[in-house]
Length: 258
Ligand code: PEP
Image (tube, rainbow, N blue to C red; front, side, top):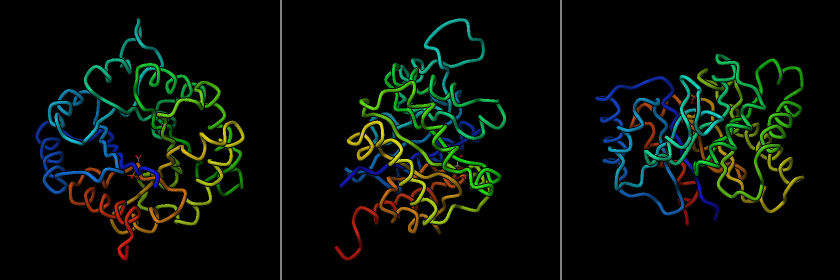
């Protein structure tokens, strides 16, 4: 059985008190983790140190929502993946659609950031996904292929610590998740596209889905064979919701009747 992943993207939310309550709520509700699952949360940069403290000696991992494509240098306002790593972080979300939309990030930058994250010892969570307009005009696969090829033009498929996230932009923060059938079909497409480069790597690559996952739709999405977990936005800000989503992920590993 392949491992499953649950990653919370807190976006630009939180403060010292609410972060503490949120992490405390998760750890209280899930004191120990199923061995085949990894859970992490990605707070805004200023709270990484707090997360390092709050998650010390627990199973809960943490990461950044973005990193620089450089490891060090005169890049004012940027954060090196090495700094995230030094604080004990394990992950970096790369190429999130909100960064593409509001910060002008492009495919090439995503690839360079993924490479920098890997070089720093972080696991990049590489986000790909089409807009509503791209889907409606039948260009979803063209866009996904372009984004994937750009990222994998920089990183090596031999590296076994990479997570791919299918995050259709039209499903992010809209409350309208992709149907389980769409998720499965696009995950399958992504896996096949990677398999052109490296079949064994493609089979092992974790592909998680993100876009309006909540406790009410998590089960149907996680039950799809090519879904290896979730990248959760808004629902990750509520401990009860996040923990219930974790419970649905567990059911995908251990069916109720087994
Ligand atoms: C995200 O920000 O990565 C995300 C999936 O957001 P939401 O779950 O709120 O759609």
